Image (cartoon, rainbow, N blue to C red; front, side, top):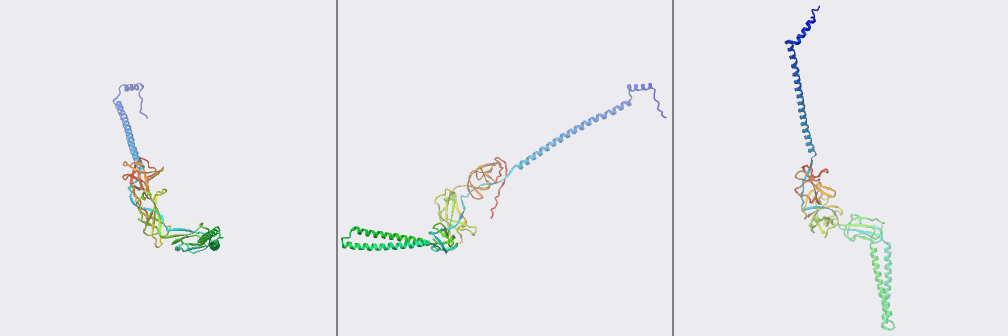
Length: 417
């Protein structure tokens, strides 16, 4: 059973009224305990929010600093990557005296191409290529029946005229005897006889000249060597028909000594001397050969701006062959002071020659230059640069004016042997 007994209604209402107007100490203690935790919770939340905001600001500032540093590093790396590195060198003073190497071809001291001086058929040839022939040696023989018949006819006509002259002279002698004994011979008739003798004698002289001419023509059927030499070409065979001066028969060359011609540039043309010794080299010959300057042209060729020089080369054993390629090493002196630079430094655009120069502030500038001689790997520069300038070797096409560059010393490759 329940022991609960509800209070009467009047007592309950009195108790509520008393609680409202006279609160007890126990009720007041409960309210103070519940209000303090709420206030502390609000303060803690504010502190946490401020901490989070500060943390976010610090993180943002740190991220901004890192981004700025990374951007600066990327910019520095990009600038360092884009900056070109070029090879550099210096110009060297050109030598006023140097050895000039020029190409040439050997040829015989005397060379001749032999043609026929009469018409005929080749009946035989006596000398071929590589054979040595002395002056007057028979090279070939032509069959010329027409010239033989003409010569025989001319000789017969000459005999007829000779007989007429003999008869005219005897007749004149008789008339002279009659004129001395008798006065019946008129001077007119005597003059006619004398005139006939002179005329017949002139005809005989003409006949003799014709016989001699035809005899010479007939002798041309024998093709002979004009000088001592070696046969280098033979262009006929037995049975070939040759006309006068129309076909080459033989080529003959005198091989001792040999000759060669070179063309020296105008800038060195004044330093040449007659009888000066020069060196001549052939790839198939060991060592250099000594040649001598025999002739020097008296002027400059306007087409090539060079001066012709003829060389004489002894060849006693015929070891050197005419037509062979050779190089002449000739000491020459130039009166023009020049600078020598590698050919790889040249920039040729729009018919202008330029050279890229690295200025003291490590920036590029382009100089127009005036070139001299082409020396192969090097070229001469007459104007535009000095020995103190730093030159760019093999400049890239993208190189522009005032572009900053890094430099590296250029080391030329050793020439191939």
